[in-house]
Image (cartoon, rainbow, N blue to C red; front, side):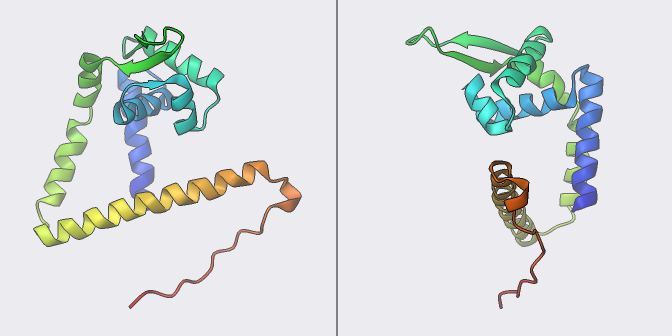
Length: 158
C-alpha cells in the first residue's frame, strides 16, 4: 500500500510537470473537481492550507486557465472557485495510461473480489480521514503535552 501510494504521488507529480503546474496546485484542482464549485475558504478548510496560500494557488490555476472565479449571484461578496471543464479534460487525458493500466489489473478479478476491493478502498479512505484528523489535533497541542504515539496491536475480528 505504501509503495502504491508513493507511486500515485509520483504519477501525480509527472502529470503536474506535463501540465506545467505545481503538484500542490494539481492536488487542489483535483479537490475542486471532486468538491465542485467552492469558496476559497472551503478549499482552505479541505486542504488544510491557509486562505493566503489558497489565494496563491487559485491565482496560479486561474492564470493557467484551469479554474475561474465566479461571484455568487445572490451575494456579490461571495466568490466561488470552479474548474474550467475543457481544461480539466486536457489534464484528465494525462490519466488515461493510469486508467488503462488499472482496468487491465481489475479485469483479472471477479465481481465479488471487486466488491471486496471497493469496500477495502472505501474503508481505507475513512481510516485515512480519521488518522489525518487525529494528527491535525496535535497541531493545537504543545509538543511537551503531545501523547507518545505508539502502534497498538489490534486483535482481528472473527
